[in-house]
Length: 137
Length: 133
Image (tube, rainbow over all chains, first blue to last red; front, side, top):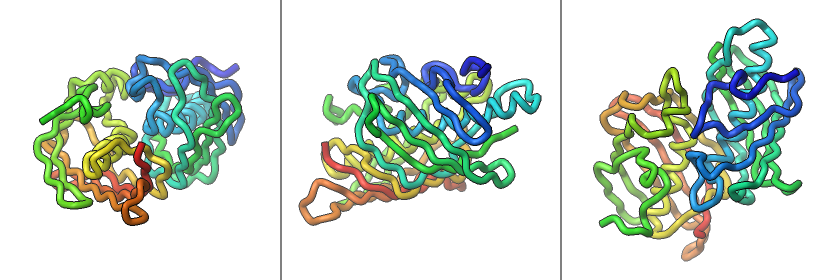
């Protein structure tokens, strides 16, 4: 069973942009997040572009956190974004809408992990990007 | 003068204070002071405050809009690199260099390039496209 999100990543309100990891395996995960009006990255009733990027990055960190816990870590690792590329933003989700985020891990070199991520809302692509994330163990 | 139209998200949420601004045509240099008491640091992270990289992206969006005189939406980022971890209070001033040039003369889609640095450290570089809302 996948632990609660607060066991997987160190982020907290108002910068917690994942509610739940609904599926995870060795190289991919799926997360859900319902946009909260209290989120720091909400503006004018919509999740900002920065919020979409943060949602994808936190989803990736959640997968890394789950792997760390499986390997005996006592708490979630801190993940920081090293690079974002090929980012495309198609729409900004409204407060109350639910983001469905898919992450696929690529190669890992030391503490740097490459990955691709995409966000859909009601089945429609809202954003996609490639990342390099630094996971501090 | 600050008006309702240019109170952007991160300014309204007191993430930073603008200390100086110099705009020349399609580019600008801005010096900013991060507010260590901003609520964002309650959650990023509770045990060790770190400036969210995505707030750097948002700063670029907001200041690119300032340069072109309107609100911009990020449509794509070809590359954004974060080259150092920025902690609130680590830099007295941050320097944000932004250029926003229309892809087509008179058009509403802009090629945006930006860097963010402190006194001796480079924190971020970004290249992307933004469109007028």
